[in-house]
Structures are given as C-alpha cells and as structure tokens.
Amino acid sequence: MWMRRAGMIIGFSLGFFLYDTPGVSLAAPDWVRIGGTHKYDRYVDMTTIGVWGPTVTLWTLRDFRVERAIPVGPYRSVKMKRQYHCDQRKGRPLHVRYYPQAWAQGPVLYAAPATREWSRVVPGSDDDAEMKVAVVRSYRR
Image (cartoon, rainbow, N blue to C red; front, side):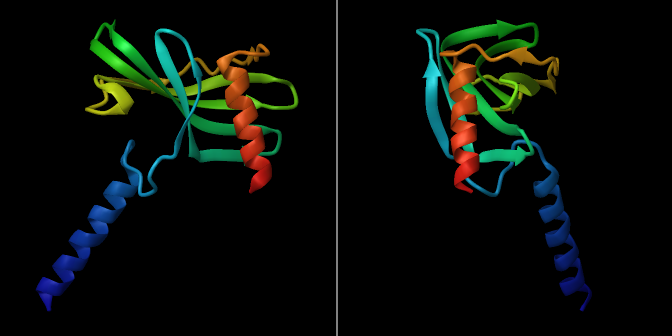
C-alpha cells in the first residue's frame, strides 16, 4: 500500500516539476520561418500564439549562422517572448533566453525579463512579419 502511495506522490511531483520548468513543453513547437538576414533566420512558434484583446503574445527564435558572444559565454540562438499591440502597431520584448547551440538547444546560458518598452513596428521588418503571422493565426482560432 505504501509503495503505491509513494509511486503516486513521485509521479505527481514529477508532473508538477515538468509543468513548471521553463523550456519544457508537453506540446511540440511548430516553428515557422518568417524572415531573417544574412546573419540569422527568424522563426515564430505557432503553438505559443496567445490573444488578449488587441494584444498578441508569442515566442520567437533567432537562429544565428555563426557563434556570437555575451559575457557569460558564446551563443548560437536566442528565444524571445514578444507582445504586439496590433491596433497601435507596436511591439515589445517580454523575456529573453540565450542558448549555446542552434535551435535553442543546450542549457540556457542566460535568461531574463526584457526591457518591456514598446516600440513602433516598422512596415517590412521582421517584427512586422511576426505581427502579421500572429494576427492571421489569432483570427483562425
């Protein structure tokens, strides 16, 4: 009897740990390339698009072609949680995570809340492409 209870407690504890652990997701990301430059490709995780009134929140990924550096070490990719205010055509970063390998693989080198300052979305920019993808996806739900 006590073995069964211990197994249930361990199972529930593991489930809650995985649910609350950043970077662990039960749903597989659905990354769609939306732009980039000669230095990086930019993607949106379509499974993370959330709508709250006129704002849309989503996770993006910049996958760099060559290694870059921050004070804690070299990195190849950056995941960023972003929010867009579609009516006012502005966006802001909410959270950022740096990874040592491409496609946000490996341990998180650095994670922190971003500036949270709103900025204008320039037509034709990567931010503009992200906002358009988010708006189209939010209307399909």
